Image (cartoon, rainbow, N blue to C red):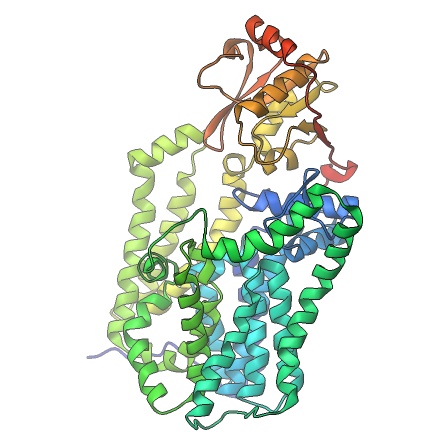
Length: 580
């Protein structure tokens, strides 16, 4: 007998209660582990340090990393970290709050637009699908800019579609442009929200129904003008500050942030080179689970609705496709770049979910994915690669993998009892949601000593006398952030080149009692490793604390002949660094 499939048990009249339950689940899934870890590389320590320094120094328009201008990204994300730090007094909490709140906001936008375009059941289905999709939950739980950019692009598209599909609503139309502008001064790509206008223009030219005409209405300019106004809110004061200072470093910052990190980075990317099919082959299949498993059914269903001229599908799907094409055209590609597509795709998938989840083939495909994921998690601690990593980082996380794998098996058992795996896709989604809770509560404190520099810098504090000056060579932002003491450095991103090492050694030789934290040298030309303190292995390298006695005599002579040392850049934590 064919099992009865009832993955959605919607109760009419209880929309508000179900929404509150979903909001609570979303908060737990995205927020589990908040405050249980330090910022982790590669990007989190840098953004946390910039926001922390903003809050302490009051310099908000020109972001700095340990006293050096940081031109890679506009400041909005770091502003939020700084403001949340001022509000909470805890950097451990503040650095994750922007992504967490952006993730919750994106879920609400998908729900509300789905509710308005179809019904509350569809809106909640779209938000639930987005919540359990791997890439979305991952980014909402880490301190990278992409979750915030995704929220702003989604808010921009939401505002435009509120007008174009449900209007007239010129206020929402203008808000869509404003959100796009804030997205631009967050990561440069906020303008992607305005791509909604291209599928709208196509559909309007073909006479599709349900569309709000713009025609020659002068209010059409509201969205672009609002976008420019938001950009000007930061760019104009920044240009005034730079122009008034006349500092060459400030002028270089202006040129870098306005030109090199935008058009040049897109058209002639200097890293992350990948082929045009990168997103379709290497990103969407693994990182869009479980949504990716539904694509063989979703794509033909979308096509049928587009042939019926249903603009509710065309505008979000057309915008998502344009975002994909935009990032695929650039030589530099990272998987996270296409995250702004995901809420639009989830929204377009929501009306089709109830029918898809009544298919036994869909549910069994989900059960297969769940079984493979669980077995992989349980087997990984038994492999030689795991043991090599555990030995290198001096941490045993087998209990975390066993907990995650056991959770998967529990969901698989639930899906199989009495239904012959007829709830497999639902169980897979439940497992992905539960995975983040277990990972946050168990994994964050377990992995933090290996992922962050907290243990490493604790070893430094024990090895270097408390009153001694400490200089960092080839340093990373997490070393500064978690130093817990005043430090000095010799420039940002010099990457341990010989000139940086020479500057550091000359600085050390210029006064007694100075120490250096350096990566273990490969040639040992200046440093006698046996006389240095071994700090351990972190960030793929072994680190040493080098006192004056660890420098060779030949190196001392050469450094003395080289002249006075270059100026070191000081940085000191505030008195509130002891707060959790």
